[in-house]
Image: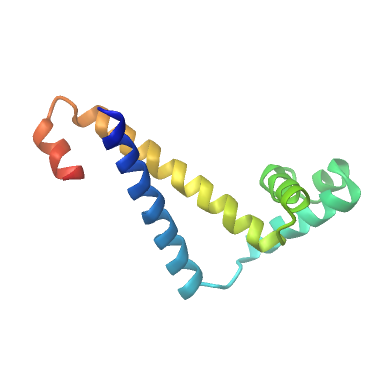
Length: 116
Protein backbone atom coordinates (compact mmCIF):
# COMPACT_ATOMS: atom_id res chain seq x y z
CA UNK A 1 0.00 0.00 0.00
CA UNK A 2 1.50 3.36 -0.92
CA UNK A 3 1.68 6.29 1.49
CA UNK A 4 -0.78 8.51 -0.39
CA UNK A 5 -3.53 5.94 -0.20
CA UNK A 6 -2.72 5.27 3.45
CA UNK A 7 -2.93 8.97 4.38
CA UNK A 8 -6.08 9.24 2.32
CA UNK A 9 -7.60 6.41 4.36
CA UNK A 10 -6.44 7.95 7.64
CA UNK A 11 -7.97 11.30 6.74
CA UNK A 12 -11.25 9.60 5.83
CA UNK A 13 -11.20 7.79 9.17
CA UNK A 14 -10.47 11.06 10.98
CA UNK A 15 -13.48 12.72 9.34
CA UNK A 16 -15.73 9.70 9.97
CA UNK A 17 -14.70 9.66 13.63
CA UNK A 18 -15.40 13.37 14.00
CA UNK A 19 -18.83 13.05 12.35
CA UNK A 20 -19.80 10.03 14.48
CA UNK A 21 -18.83 11.77 17.71
CA UNK A 22 -20.53 15.00 16.61
CA UNK A 23 -23.83 13.22 16.07
CA UNK A 24 -23.35 11.29 19.28
CA UNK A 25 -22.98 14.54 21.19
CA UNK A 26 -25.82 16.14 19.29
CA UNK A 27 -28.39 13.41 19.91
CA UNK A 28 -27.14 11.86 23.17
CA UNK A 29 -25.66 14.69 25.27
CA UNK A 30 -26.48 13.02 28.59
CA UNK A 31 -23.58 11.69 30.65
CA UNK A 32 -24.24 8.19 31.95
CA UNK A 33 -23.84 7.08 35.54
CA UNK A 34 -20.52 5.46 34.59
CA UNK A 35 -19.35 8.77 33.20
CA UNK A 36 -20.29 10.53 36.42
CA UNK A 37 -18.24 7.94 38.34
CA UNK A 38 -15.24 8.52 36.04
CA UNK A 39 -15.52 12.29 36.56
CA UNK A 40 -15.78 11.85 40.33
CA UNK A 41 -12.73 9.62 40.42
CA UNK A 42 -10.81 12.05 38.17
CA UNK A 43 -11.72 14.93 40.49
CA UNK A 44 -10.64 12.93 43.55
CA UNK A 45 -7.40 11.90 41.81
CA UNK A 46 -6.66 15.54 40.96
CA UNK A 47 -7.16 16.74 44.51
CA UNK A 48 -6.27 13.77 46.74
CA UNK A 49 -4.06 11.45 44.71
CA UNK A 50 -4.03 7.86 43.58
CA UNK A 51 -4.78 6.23 46.92
CA UNK A 52 -8.03 8.15 47.34
CA UNK A 53 -9.03 7.42 43.73
CA UNK A 54 -8.34 3.70 44.23
CA UNK A 55 -10.49 3.75 47.37
CA UNK A 56 -13.47 4.96 45.33
CA UNK A 57 -12.94 2.79 42.23
CA UNK A 58 -10.55 -0.11 41.71
CA UNK A 59 -9.86 0.65 38.02
CA UNK A 60 -9.23 4.42 37.90
CA UNK A 61 -6.98 4.42 34.83
CA UNK A 62 -9.40 6.18 32.46
CA UNK A 63 -10.12 8.70 35.20
CA UNK A 64 -6.40 9.25 35.69
CA UNK A 65 -6.08 9.94 31.96
CA UNK A 66 -8.98 12.39 32.23
CA UNK A 67 -7.45 14.17 35.21
CA UNK A 68 -4.03 14.35 33.55
CA UNK A 69 -5.51 15.76 30.35
CA UNK A 70 -7.59 18.20 32.40
CA UNK A 71 -4.52 19.35 34.29
CA UNK A 72 -2.06 19.58 31.37
CA UNK A 73 -4.23 21.05 28.62
CA UNK A 74 -6.74 22.88 30.79
CA UNK A 75 -9.86 21.33 29.30
CA UNK A 76 -12.87 20.70 31.48
CA UNK A 77 -13.40 17.07 32.48
CA UNK A 78 -16.26 16.49 30.00
CA UNK A 79 -14.27 18.03 27.14
CA UNK A 80 -11.23 15.96 28.10
CA UNK A 81 -13.46 12.86 28.00
CA UNK A 82 -14.74 13.82 24.53
CA UNK A 83 -11.16 14.24 23.32
CA UNK A 84 -10.10 10.87 24.76
CA UNK A 85 -13.16 9.19 23.26
CA UNK A 86 -12.28 10.72 19.89
CA UNK A 87 -8.71 9.42 20.09
CA UNK A 88 -9.79 5.93 21.22
CA UNK A 89 -12.50 5.66 18.56
CA UNK A 90 -10.13 6.87 15.84
CA UNK A 91 -7.48 4.27 16.72
CA UNK A 92 -10.10 1.54 17.04
CA UNK A 93 -11.40 2.31 13.55
CA UNK A 94 -7.87 2.51 12.18
CA UNK A 95 -6.98 -0.90 13.63
CA UNK A 96 -10.20 -2.33 12.23
CA UNK A 97 -9.30 -1.05 8.76
CA UNK A 98 -5.77 -2.47 9.05
CA UNK A 99 -7.17 -5.86 10.09
CA UNK A 100 -9.63 -5.88 7.20
CA UNK A 101 -6.85 -4.85 4.83
CA UNK A 102 -4.63 -7.72 6.03
CA UNK A 103 -7.42 -10.25 5.79
CA UNK A 104 -8.63 -9.04 2.40
CA UNK A 105 -5.17 -8.87 0.82
CA UNK A 106 -5.52 -12.22 -0.96
CA UNK A 107 -9.02 -11.21 -2.03
CA UNK A 108 -8.44 -8.00 -3.97
CA UNK A 109 -12.09 -7.78 -5.01
CA UNK A 110 -13.25 -7.70 -1.38
CA UNK A 111 -10.56 -5.14 -0.59
CA UNK A 112 -11.61 -2.89 -3.45
CA UNK A 113 -15.21 -3.06 -2.26
CA UNK A 114 -14.14 -1.92 1.18
CA UNK A 115 -12.30 1.24 0.09
CA UNK A 116 -13.29 2.08 -3.50
